[in-house]
Image (tube, rainbow over all chains, first blue to last red; front, top):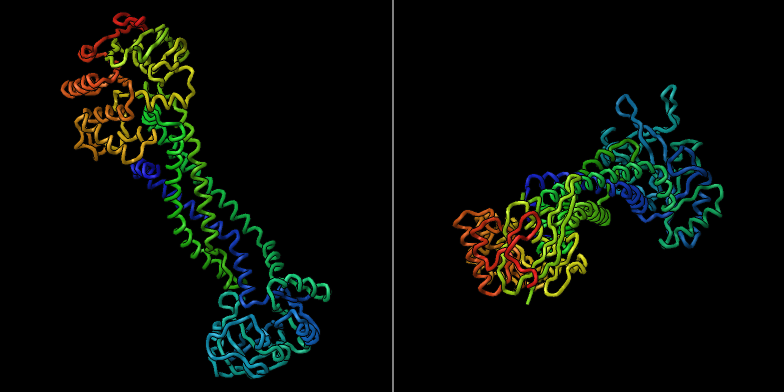
Length: 395
Length: 228
């Protein structure tokens, strides 16, 4: 049946090619929308779980790095967490602005105060990591290295607690660049640096004493992470405790318009596909009514006629879908690069995630669309009055 | 013994609001192996009668029996099956599928009847040999001449070995020489025992038949004894 469908489509090559082109564009759009609707969440979850840390503790009522609020009494909190038998590692992070001299001017940097022995925030790309109690070293992102023209081994002067009125810093500190790192949650070209938590607390002055913006926790067993998060929430009522699943849920709420947009555009692309296929097949049926009436006259069943038309709809959408997948993946890559360069968004976050499930979902929906679109023309074809049509053909 | 019987067949329909009486009580009986021509001017109802005899149209009144089966009692599915296995149709405009080869066109009814591919390929080759077109088996319908297309259509009509072949103006689209070849082929079919009913307004073709039913204004006016 399918070979005959393909041969029938080849009878009007230009028309079929144009229709397949239209379906391919609509399919590409559908695939991109399917990827967009769930991709960003999966990418976000993958990013958060990338280093195996499943729980985030932040100041009550905030999400990590949502505000400048910080947790106080962090050393006591860390001790308590480390004593917990379910917890494998605890990573405190204090974030804030620090500055570096470049000639006569100051460059603003985002500083991460971290514990180098337990850190889920970066990967070393050049040079080496900070030591556990390294109070004279600093890690740079490539963007900050470029901004302050520094390489591993160089010494830079870092300033903290800058007075915005006079530009004078309360804390100054020379630090040796140990390495260049890629910060996992940074936006593109973010000028970030990393120092040990104690150095960062000192650079922040009294406001940073024994404080952290965030504590990231690694639970020994993934499956108990939600339980441990629940227990910590009960035990630490003044701290916001979120598992990755909860953070993903918050993220989903914030980006609900992305999903709505993808649903709307995906639906539009499906409607376009249905209209294209249905129009083409309806025209085809009108042109071939005589042929269809002949087939019915010589004993071909209605079911066979219906199947044949559905096969033609399926063949059209099938070819269009295959081309559409390739086109959609290419378009997704291009769009993703644009969206990932938006300021304030982690560069590691993908909006379009090409997962086999997304591709198969799009292909399955398109196949179904092809069948639905072929249903009306198939019905017309199967109901063609044989004698009347043959009489009309003969005149 | 009659293969096909029609009793008081009427066909009325409306065309742009006007009542049309295409058939006004036609009765006829056709024996096995008979070659009957239904002749008459255009619009006299011969094609309508042929369609009703072959079960592709239904009469407004009266009945048609093929091999003792009352066609009016059959469901659409049963009628379709009957047309597939018991009746072969040949049309004025051949109506071959242009995307298929001659062989595939002949195979089509056999495939629909569920015959296995090797068996239907062999029979299609046999039938194309019978109509003198074995060398054209692999040619697309669009690559054939009018006469060749009609011979392929005749081979297709014979595919499931139906006892009855109905032909509607089979030489209407052909020149005299090619039309002669088709008439010769019908004679061959008749000689080989196929029951043939041919609708024509061509006296030359009608003269080839064993019996001629002349129609005028929806009635048979001579030549057929309805009691037979």
